[in-house]
Length: 134
Picture (cartoon, rainbow, N blue to C red):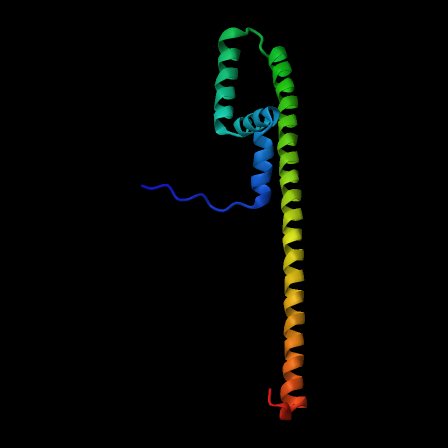
């Protein structure tokens, strides 16, 4: 089976991916965010905590509470990093779309003016001055 060609991507997406790929810190944050949002992460934690509580700690609750609290702090930070990334993308996309729409509006306005000018000239030649023969 042949692989389908890459779809054309929004220029804001391409720009953001290039900038994020250039930064090791952002690549690590992206990887952690992707991993922490996966079921694999959940399975590893469920197994790890179960093994720890059943086999390695006689009274796991105080340490478990500390570990889970610290992990929650870090995970919430990664969630915010992901939200910031999404907000940055949305702003880039909105800016790009606005510029494209402004360009399209300018082009349409110029076309409308040209059509009006040609219509006026045709009207002048055909209606106002039919004897000129043009």
